[in-house]
Length: 93
View 1 (cartoon, rainbow, N blue to C red):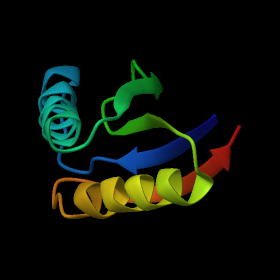
View 2 (spheres, one colour):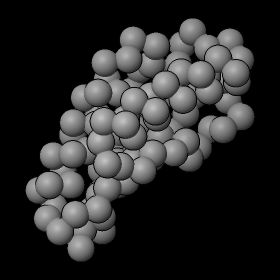
View 3 (cartoon, helix red, strand yellow):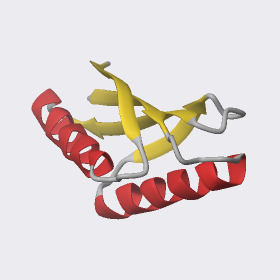
View 4 (cartoon, helix red, strand yellow):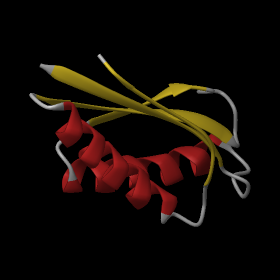
């Protein structure tokens, strides 16, 4: 069993409140979990208005499959104009 973990550090430049940030993140999380069979959660900068870390996890019997799914997830998240991806970490356990 392979567990793939993708962490994306995000900058949300137009967010002026936690409510605005959470609205953007909720949209990303809902669309991502609807389209892919992954778990997604905000894991850092919970009290910052314009920063966030999203952690996305998938499980498979092959590392290649985990990598493909997480790459597609990252591409989907990159399509959001409200955010900028500052940093990216991908690891397999």
